[in-house]
Every structure is written in structure tokens, then in C-alpha cells.
Length: 227
Image (cartoon, rainbow, N blue to C red; front, top):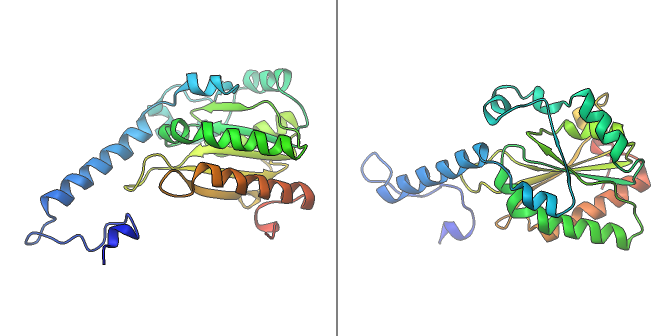
């Protein structure tokens, strides 16, 4: 049986004496390098802007600080929040946010396809969508502050996942009804493993639309939402 057809996990790889074979060692080092690059690279902001996203920054100044200070990657300055309040659509049914997270290549590889599916799908269903926002140096909790600033019903955050040794392009979609910093982490519903070798962006987009419709109807999310 060819295990590689079933899973990209490193099982049954064989050995040379007490060590990995040279082929497997080189593949491991290659995948580790891809994961490192995913963390330290930057998203293509020209792509982001071409899709109509408003770009904002957390309290982080650079990648090194982003790794060392996750707390600052969850917050915005008062000036940034005021800018969001004054320039973005208020009280949308759905607010879409993208953030580089721990894998900028996830944004480059998946955002265009999944965003197109989301906007077309919500428009077809008559669901209003707010001003799309891209968060530079962003972590998951940024969705809470943006949701509060614009008064969104359902907030969707598309963010690069922490890369593993199988892919450096995996994205997750965090979703919440009336997302708020005063609510626990359990408010969030997650669609994960979005990439060409996992859940295809087009399929993920369809799932996210379906879940958002249920959230709008049931007015709940996370552990309180039964799908």
C-alpha cells in the first residue's frame, strides 16, 4: 500500500541504520524551511488591495515583534479603531476580515478564490457585506474589535494558520455572531485546513456561507450553535 496517497504525514518512511534515509532527511529540511518562510514572509498587499480590502495595522511594528508579542497582535490603536468606525460600512449582516496570521502565503494562495465565492454567495442571498478589511500583523482576536467597531452581526476572519510540515499555505476561517472582546473563545466557529491539498477554497467558501446563514437565523455561534 502506498501510504503517501492517503496522508502526507511522515509514517513508514524507512531508515538507513538508526537514521532517516537521505531522501527523507532532505524532504524534512525542505518542509521545515517552507514552514519557517511562511511565518517570516509578508502577504502580497497589492493582491489584497486589488480585491478592495482596507488595510489596517495592529500595534505590531515588524515580524520579530509579532512573534514575541502576540498580545499586541490582538489589538489596535484608538486612532485605527476610529478610522475603521469613520470609513467602513456600519451594521453589515456579514463583516469579512483577512489577516496574515502565522502564514502569509496562505493569504496569497487562497484569498482571491475564497473571497470571490463569499461575496458572490452573500450577494445572491441578499445578505449585506461590510467593507472588507485586511489586518497586517493580525491575530484572531482582532475580529472582536472590528466587529464591535462596525456593529456586525456575523464576523468572518480569514487567517493564515501556523504552518506544519505538510503545507505552508493553510488558512482558517474564524466565525462569530456579534463577535466581542467581552465574550469567551468558545464564541467562535472554525473552518480550518483551507488550501489546495486540504479543503479547497471554493468548497470552504460554500461551507462558510452556509454556516453564516445559520448564525444569522439562530443568532448564535461557537459552542452554542448546533449545526
